[in-house]
Image (cartoon, rainbow, N blue to C red; front, side, top):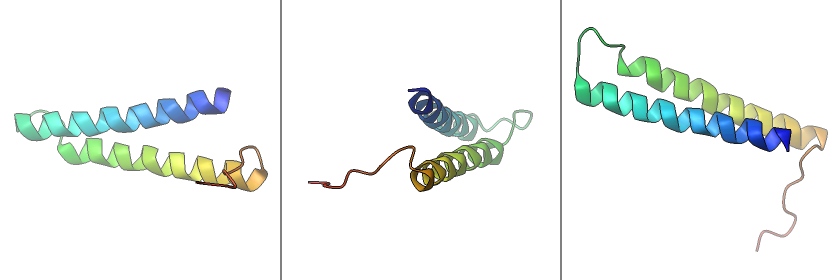
Amino acid sequence: MLLKIILVTLLAIVIFSLFQALFAMLKNDETAPKMSKFLGRRLIFSALVVILLIVLLLTGVITPNPRPY
């Protein structure tokens, strides 16, 4: 259960960073943080989600659906 909460939290942070980048792009303020900062943060959290899923699959903590249809 804790792993699901961690994964959902990381995915929520990814979406939140994406919307922060959108607002930074629309605002176009010179003093505000640049859009690339938020997109870079989104990339890092997305990579963490993928790495965490791969590690959990390899260790056997989670198992893929053997019958996907």
